[in-house]
Length: 88
Image 1 (spheres, rainbow, N blue to C red):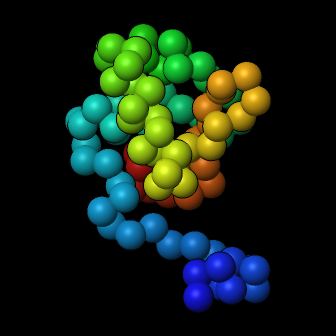
Image 2 (image 1 turned 30 degrees about the horizontal axis):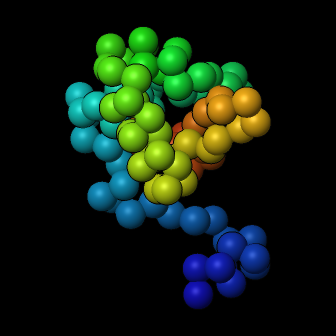
């Protein structure tokens, strides 16, 4: 059903449990992303103050939740789903 809604142009809504808890490692990594400026894992790791490997795991989870998008060159951008006020 979700695929049919997307094909029909209906907006996808986030489930509340997909929004990272404020102050969590996931929220720190997501806060470092931008919708227009792709960033590397190393940059996001440094900004969040987290080990590189932990940042990679978090980015994979955020990607599976459609909150970040992987671009060519192993660069990440924030998805349109992570633009709402609940992510501020």
